Image 1 (tube, rainbow, N blue to C red):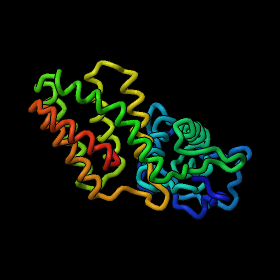
Image 2 (image 1 turned 60 degrees about the vertical axis):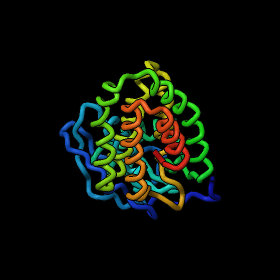
Image 3 (image 1 turned 90 degrees about the horizontal axis):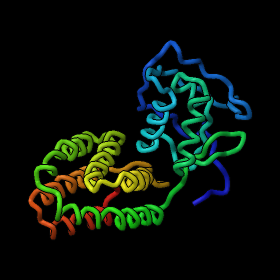
Image 4 (image 1 turned 135 degrees about the horizontal axis):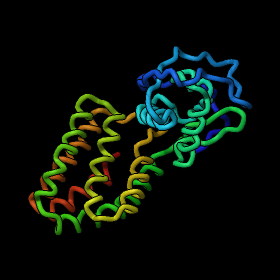
Length: 253
């Protein structure tokens, strides 16, 4: 899944749908040591407002990954992305380092960060591992958790449907993980939830040549959440088993 040469950032679009708000304490973009930006045209600055600038930039970059605005195989420098968000290169670089730990990007010395290129096989492997972890837990919970506790998760399932209906991929990704995390949290194992969430996040990144999930796929995935919750409330273990296996086999979420 590696290409023979890196494609330059100037050939790829900057994240444009990510909205961040201004703060007087945020510094203007500054040249990062060792990163070449003379050929990059920085887009108009957006503003940032939040206690953790790094945290907001990390959220914005994650949304841009899910939306396909950061293109697999393309290289992006911290100063140019900082100019896009109206911040210095430092919080962008720190956020990108976190994404590198998560496997979303890889460091390209003296240039910036290349968005990881993934194929269908990697996605299938992630789905298989998630199924091995989540399916047994969900089946156990289906037998032990009372209907009232499942009913409390209805707003979270509805949130995935609402995001899918408008084609908001970034919001859907967050709602999708929140729903799965809420279900798994009923097992009372925080490490299980953390590991499953990391695998889930990795499964949401776009594939090379297919940068974004189609709205129809989001709707289908969201409908499975609703159907699963209905089966859990009804304590229909057979239907739950069928739905969760299908969910991991055929869906991105």
